[in-house]
Image 1 (tube, rainbow, N blue to C red):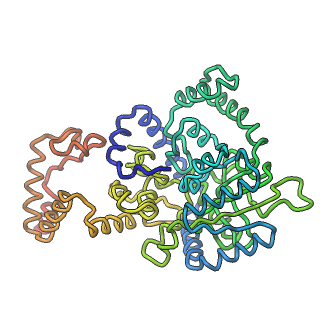
Image 2 (cartoon, rainbow, N blue to C red; image 1 turned 120 degrees about the vertical axis):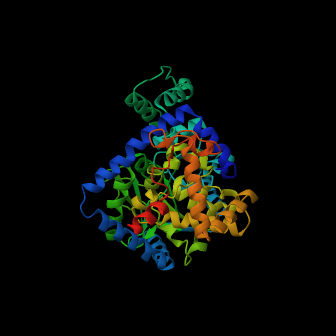
Image 3 (spheres, helix red, strand yellow; image 1 turned 135 degrees about the horizontal axis):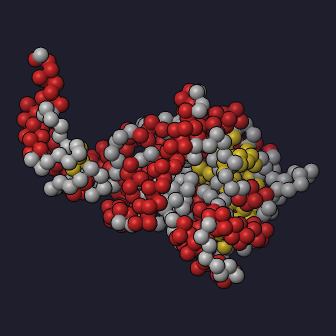
Length: 473
């Protein structure tokens, strides 16, 4: 996927004016976040499980070399193969060579954000190999030529009518010439079209939610079953995963699965949790003849042992974006690269550079909701602050912003001046009136009020003024 993160501000303007997108995002706000809250409340030990999940990931990252080597040894002992890809280019090359060796003309793909990260589909198409996305959301956006807008719901930015129009345009040549209006009918049509794709595929490519060092297994967590068809029907199964996906044991997996589904979709467990452990054995009824695992680094090892290591705890549940007011206003495409939302604001500068993605860590209200719902307790606001500091140090911010921050620092370091100026600002804002406690429009603040209200000053003056009066009583 080609990055447009450098055009973030323009992307945002387009997103805010897109009526279909805003309609879709309004449903997201009422869906995932509420179901997550209910699922957490039904499980008394949920917060303790979050602590345990954090500790498992921390232990795995602290001993990553050991667990990756253990995983490789187990896979090889089972008759599989592990391929190490330091860069995205290496991963593309390895997978392309494996597909050519298998004589692949078509590839059935299950949803994989890492495949998006390395632009795998474009590479396969350039080799004359047709990649077919089999996750329903991914299939829809592949027909439309769009990237995913969410980690777990790639087509969440689309309305039902847009999907209906897309199917009519692309399925008409296959004999489906009726515009469908019901969701179940749309799903049935997609299932009918994709069924033959699974049968025809020479290679199946999947991602992995986790890699288990103890058993050499790759784990897939899905709700559609397409991943199972992608890895059992073709003769060759290729797993693409990044280095931080490895965890020690199946017992650890049990803990992580209990927080993953609840955080992602509000389910107690996903419909399908699949363990793939090597190629088909002599007495197996089905499964691939060849099993390959491609493990990608792509800059991740550079943060091991640094203050940014905590970003690698992410288990790709999407909870942070489901609760983020910024994501909820602009959607995923505005972020301009593979990973949107708060986790994207932390990951993308590491993977594609701060010069390209420097606006993303600034696209946050720092309300802290992302950290409060993260199942592995990643301190996302603190990590975004790290990138803001690096951006400031490297003089990547516009001069006007740097001057403004310098002025703020000058005032903030002088308490009397600060109190005098905030008191004056409080009185000036009051001149514009107080409509139900917030301004929907305000001079010089249009960038803020265009998308949200600005709280109006309350009677009694600033907090400092009220606190001082209270002390004198």
